[in-house]
Amino acid sequence: MRHKDETKVTAMYDAVIAIMVQEGTQNLSVAKIAKRANISVATLYIYYQDKQDLLGHVYLRIKDMIDAELFREWDEHATVEQQFKTVVSHYAKALRQHPQEAVAMRLFNATPNLIAAAVYQTGMARGLPIERLFQRGVAEKTFRPVSFALFTAFVFRPFDAACETKFRQGDRLSAEESRQMLAMAWQASLAQ
Image (tube, rainbow, N blue to C red; front, top):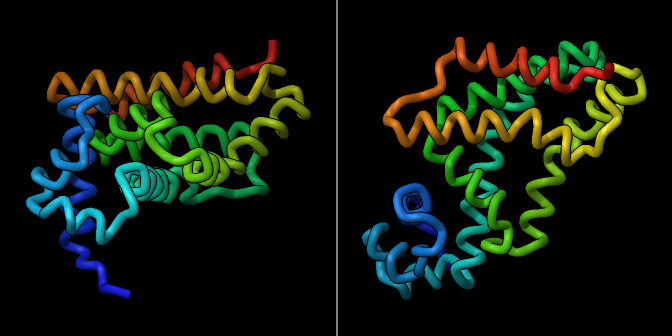
């Protein structure tokens, strides 16, 4: 098997993110990615089966980067409130630290058909601790008894939208704005 040049892998990763962020997902062609990465199309196909395979790797790399921050300091023994506030504040921090990747991840989540269904499910399965936290919060009557999809939409999607808006304005979500959004997410999640 041929050794992968990490410089080329990183160049392809950066090219995919730049095109997604600047031009949208509709302009993600193999030729454009290769040109932006300063490699040949043939080289891209040495590293990946096809565009969907490349995008799947980019998606999982971003997911790993965000989740590494998200689950830092995860404590199964903490209260629901402590876990919630820790994970959501770490999520906001990850988005602030990696705004381009955050925009790309939002685009992947909005158009999951860009990647193989199995890859998308692998990425989503990495968030199981959050689902367990939600289920525990509902069982303890801390969280509203809504679907997990609705819960995550109200908790995490506002951060995605705010980070993207700030990024497109040439700015970043501030730590204070993140704290305010965290307080709002907590209040929105509470059982009545």
